[in-house]
Picture: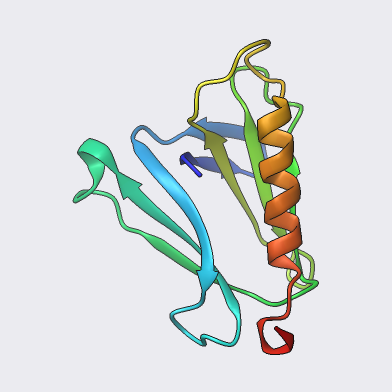
Length: 124
């Protein structure tokens, strides 16, 4: 899905979208193909200037959710239950309606992310 990264100061609660286009991709991890990985990759003009991010997802440890407190865009959070580590992404696909509300398509993508993140690839 098309998504930019969000820089967050969790102490103050201040979140700032990082300029530039990106995408969040879930697929077999480059670290261990028996696990799923979440990879953020820059796209568009910042394709060569922003570092990518590759995270290993252990089934049952990751939860994706909407961040309704953000009123200037559609933001989702990826939280690791075991460590409390959090990554925020702002959705870059066009959406109709309120700027901060998830569309039906966004909600379906969020549901699919949670389904995939909690799938054990070894059982498949």
